[in-house]
Image (tube, protein in one colour):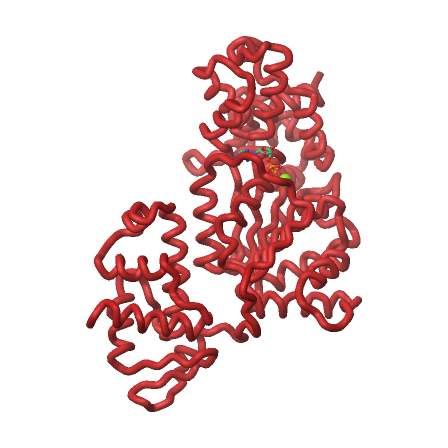
Length: 457
Ligand SMILES: Nc1ncnc2c1ncn2[C@@H]1O[C@H](COP(=O)(O)OP(=O)(O)O)[C@@H](O)[C@H]1O
Ligand SMILES: [Mg+2]
């Protein structure tokens, strides 16, 4: 069958589902896939990232699968399209009915693949409302992180993602960059920081004002939730709630909502369980408990732990007046590739060490700048007494220790210790490494120095 003929047919199929024709990239993916080209090569030819091509391809296979009622992949797409064309498959816009040899049928397979409700309207352009999001002036690397998140959101249609990371690691920056990368896939993109702990009622009222509405915004939380879910079904939306940790109580184990905020749990659960094609991304220092529970049984819920920026952090250091570039890697290692910690430390090196990184490293690093300490104070103020006790013991240890050894040195019951360790893990304050079926726990250099200076001197 002629390539052009199959492409035209694929275009009809996609149009029947999305109301949009194949874009340039989708056409290239189909054409090149038929010729056996790998995603990496397609990306290279088109001067874009492999992750981008991969997620566009996944999205395309998904649309084709849903309309044709078969699991379309890179390897079978050509034969499935050819077969469907030969059997005179005729996609009908917004309908599950297909025509084979002019007989109208509605196969179960196709029906079970289609979402319960089709978007009622397709806005022509993406509505972007970033609220009070900070402006990003420079952005380095995070290529794999962006590709993974893009894949999860666009291709796997993950509905609820927790972007977990210690303060300053770059969650806000990464999520705003992600918007830039994937915005054309959405009808609505909304960013809201929860730093002032808005109630769910306030948050949903705010969200509902963004979508087109004729009547007044409902007052009742149940009606608000159901209206928001309706919008998430009708439109493809990406909603980012930043600083989710502000909804969690201080002085309690990680991820417990403050009194009056518990209904967020139900909202997140519904986002995960109700059928829609939108995504809610939650940026947080602490892993929400319901996410930990939901992700065990629900494929649409995932956690992404954001770690070191790695050597790309050198670019941040280059923006400063620093010397001794050959020592920067050590500096990045000590400060865990945390962009904010490195920015704050770079200021100290500029101000006190005339920009000499090696002079700074000669001192007993890590030196914790006052503002870095203040950053960590905010996180440590949330810990329970038991967690502080564990942290001070771990700070004394020269090497990683296993749970039974910690039990010998802290005056805690096994249950209290296990709960404290789990909670510290959810806050990313303790590192655990598995060796020969035993987990060994330790603190990174900055956290260890902080605990020593705040609690042990
Ligand atoms: N990939 C990156 N490239 C450049 N700067 C970054 C990057 N990630 C974070 N930063 C910088 O580090 C600081 C902390 O980042 P931020 O996104 O606010 O962290 P978080 O939200 O995790 O607390 C900001 O000044 C930001 O500009
Ligand atoms: Mg942030």
